[in-house]
Amino acid sequence: MAQKLEHVVLAYSGGLDTSVAIPWIKEQYGAEVTTLTVDVGQEGELGDAIDRATRNGAKGALFVDAKESFATEFLLPAIKANALYQGVYPLSTALARPLIVRHLVAAAQQVKADTVAHGCTGKGNDQVRFDVGVQTLAPHLHIVAPVREWNMNRPDEILYAREHGLAIHVKPESPYSVDENLWGRSVEGGCLEDAATAPPEEVFQWTGHPDTWPSEPQDVTIGFESGVPVSLDGKALPLVALIQELNATAGKHGVGRIDHVEDRVVGIKSRETYECPAAITLILAHQALEALVLPRDVRSVKTPLEQRWGELVYGGSWYTPLREALSAFIEKTQETVAGEVTVRLFQGSARVVGRKSAYSLLAKELATYERTSTFPQEAAEGFIHLYGLANRLAYVRQREAQSAHAGGAGEVAPSPVPEPSSS
Image (cartoon, helix red, strand yellow):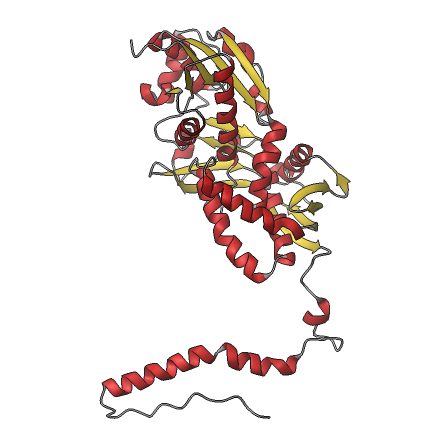
């Protein structure tokens, strides 16, 4: 038997990995096991998870409804940051992990446990997110990772569950690993591990089969206040309800399917399949509104910081000074991100077709080509001269230096830096 532990709180999803972890922890460490299930919007996975935890040997089963805090504390910052890891993935799983870690640590304190556990593998990102988060918030706690320590694969886990009479939902003929929350659904395993193979339609649940996608487009209008989505088609909605409704509406049109080869934290590439209808639609709309209201210099600074923000979250660095500092900067940029954006949903695509804001920097009187334009075109010539002055001077100096280096033989004398026209 491994090191003796007293009481372990296991982050319990109800899936295969955490189901087999309950008896494994008891066998290997002789410890009592209390499970913690955190509801972050995974209605399709919860089901009878709490009952199955006790049936599979847990001493107790805790449950936390964290949908509201997940939306306001984690998804809102992601929307404001236009967070897309490697420009593609809306970080649905990554964003939920620091919240689950926080509740896991709190649960350990509540039941006076000396250890926390999770069902992450040694190849994935989640082990980093859980371990780093726990070590930051509660460095005194031990961490146990049965799947990583056991080095088991899914067929072996299914066999173990069968031998121990465990209540599980996964079967050999359906080998997919699924993670789900308000912000998205991720599916991996089985034939999806072959990047050359198209994902079978059976892995998609939120976006339906293409045969069921409506034959006519649908426009949805999303209202924002200070970067926060507050309404859908003119109806004010709390954030959780807005995300849920948009998941259903955009998902019906097949929006949000992602097939992506991404770089994991541990150094390997993996093929990932996601469904994120609301996330893709909201970030698209938010980006369009920012383009309308933010000055160019603000956007030019914010864009690379958004990428860094996403990388930090993906890599499990939520509880860090850098992530907090970036979030503070991003929050400041959102003061004028208010207005409405209309997005057209159709046959798997979402595209912005309209936007308006009281803070719009798109001034028609300046941008129009009509006679009513107030743009001072006569000032353009002087602006262009000064705008290109440094480059012209550099070009001339380079030619002079090259000529001097060559001894002047056969070289054409460089022209002086031209002055602007006096006309």
